[in-house]
Image (cartoon, rainbow, N blue to C red):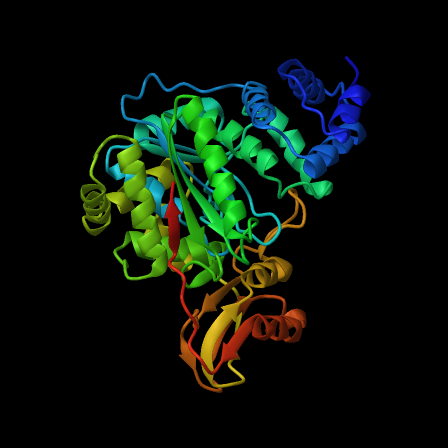
Length: 433
């Protein structure tokens, strides 16, 4: 079998066999297939599509390219959550301890920020000392001790995905449903889970900007996971504005802590409670969603979820005092408020641009090895549907690089659309699959 034949076959819109997909993934993982040939195949697949059978084979080959964990030493149901990425999306920091406090074990392998979307690992690493680079032995020990563990992808987990994702990022083939499905599901299924809750974002701050694309991706992942014997629920949620009030690593961690302390009135808290409740039902701790929602809320109001997070922070080397004193998180030296330049209702926010401003101001990476300023962040005063007057604050920026202030203020103001008529507001949770 020759790689150039597989490139030609996909170029000509023909379906690859299971054996051909296996040759492709195994050869690339072992460095027997060069990047330039895999890049050619990725683009051919991106342009001409993959069948359901090809996608299934791709997921399974990527999954079994490395270690598939088991947790026989843990009797609780193992359930994780995955988000396709958004701006201000720090839900993992809340729902993992909430679900754990309700009797669900949460073995969560997360990612870093790339492009305009934030990364769970970067938010966790804003906590002084917090380690996300645990070995698999340490990962299992923390999971057993705390009921949750939050780490990055190790070299043993889906190594094919580690290589392919980097190449997809460089070849503009990331936003393609079969590749996204294979990347997400291969990592999540390798965690040793019984079930998975998917949060698929749609809107101008998401990779899947169009609802129909997000729905198809959610259905693809849910169907594939169920065929592999897992309990799956997928939510399609709105990302046409930042989730919550804060965008940035340390400030989002602070907002997650405030939510665990009992601040449950925001859109962010509402989504956290729903996702946690879905995890409780998927884990079969409860079968009724209303009871699961009450249980999730009680885990916060009783302080149980906050204590679970405290145990996890301690177990992973972090400073648990941040839960009592958020000022121990990295703090920016400067702050500046961007004000409205007209009176009316906020009818549009270019959410992706909000995320890019944080990234460009030092709060994100342009490459996986890049440095990051954890203290950079934005407070969102005005959200969709809010009425503002000239001079009202719309965003307060917290930053260290004074040289870019004028540029960033201009970009943030341009990201807002203010008009005379109030907009129609979409629900945060659009569909549950």
